[in-house]
Figure 1 (tube, rainbow, N blue to C red):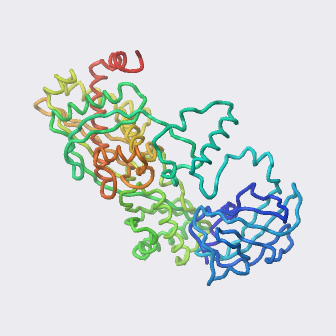
Figure 2 (cartoon, helix red, strand yellow):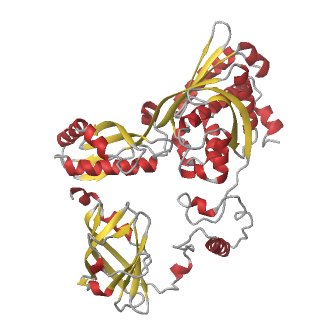
Figure 3 (cartoon, helix red, strand yellow):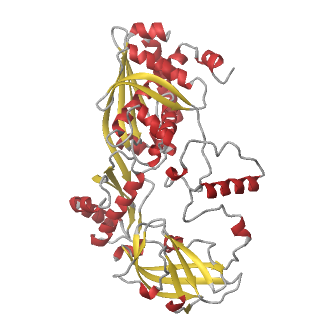
Amino acid sequence: MFFTRFIPEHIIATLYTRGSLQATGNGLKLSLKNRLMNATLTSVESVTINGEAVSLDVIMLHDGREKPLNPSEISQNNPVDFPLRKTLNVEVLLAVNEGDSLEFAIQFMANPFGKLLLKFKDSVNSTDSQEERLKIPRDESNDYGPAIIDKRLKFAEAYAGVKLTALGKHSIAPASVQGNCENFIGAAQVPIGLAGPVKINGEFARGEFLVPLATTEGTLVASYNRGIKVINLCGGVTTTVADDVMQRAPAFTFSSARLALSFKNWVDDHFDELQQHAGTSSRFARLILVESFLSNNFAFLRLNFRTGDAAGQNMVTKAAYEGCLWILENCPYKPERFFLESNMATDKKPSLINSLLGRGKRVTAEITFKKEVLERELHVTAQQLDYHRAVGNIGAMLSGTNNNGLHSVNAIAALFIATGQDVANVAESSACVTHAEVKPNGDLYASVTLPSLIVASYGGGTGLGTQRECLELMGCYGEGKARKLAEIVAGVVAAGEISLAAAISSADWVSSHEAYGRNR
């Protein structure tokens, strides 16, 4: 297959678990772990150690079956299942000594890759080596059981010389975090306060919602409650989801800019076929748009997917890989190099491209604040708020920030922690564009747009105990609820913006912290 040459040697080398090469009474053993993608091993063609061929008869593979396999028993008709994250333990009946430096070359066939060559070099360890003693304890068969968790806690205590009494006290079922957290020892518990109910007039969120905010910042929940009260007195917040998309951005390098252009044009002309092949392994991922960017002799593709109610980064990574493999096999303009991600999807980084083109949900929240409510509840006029906004726009421009709002990230981070979102997505989700207009009658129209809000109502950490309960509190757990959650997040962000804007404009920001927060 043409695309196999785009799997770099150092990536194939990650199949070997470094440090696993050990001397045994009968020879040596080592571990191979699939860190690429789901595959099946269909043959082992050759093995060399330090340049000398090793008979396959002295090699045994332990894949979890009752009886180990000899490589000669593996074939297209009798493949070895090798899914992502599975470990194969290999035993070689050759005499070695502790400290020997061995260089391996293993040639094998695996679907969907074709022929691969795994090369690695390591030194033979004894089973009780210093490196082994300092490794975090793991249990391949049950790494989330109470015995191994307790062993890890004791290991951490001995290593750091401290007593860990709180980490192990939590309500999380350890088995439930498999796929969310490795080397599990406990949980960080963050206080959760209630804000609301907030009235949302949305397309997907309609009604009044209690909002759980996980934070250790004093006055945060109180500030959001103040903003929510004002929003409710003005009839609620209207929310609109304008787009919902997740990207992966592969890069292809060519010998010339003209070849890169020909490649780009070919991809554009074959979108329908690419759409059929990108995401074939997922019932949710669907390619909807390919954006092309050419620079020098590079072609950058920004593949845009729908991902259902999952945040979707892992989903689109796999879907994009499938699509790129199809391109590499079928496009007549062959790149010299291929990278699945070019940094143009800007995962977990603020970026102008995501503010302009969107990533995750693009959602807007808008409210018309009544003149009398602003003056009575917040002790501020629409004109004061609008003037401060104008000054803040200049400050934002001069500082080069990714938004002209005040603190959208406070609501987003607190909701992300409470509901099991990937907290690192706060980096791009915090982008916020605010706008306001003073009406002739003294009311204030205000809106906030979150152009790259990445939230999920299903998958990832949303299914963990407390996180799921926080989503259920808002009626936002499960399939079909992600856009509803996005509208609630936008509404809460709007509440925080008006509350802090009023506090700054009316000069009671410091006094509020003195009375209720950490300044006491």
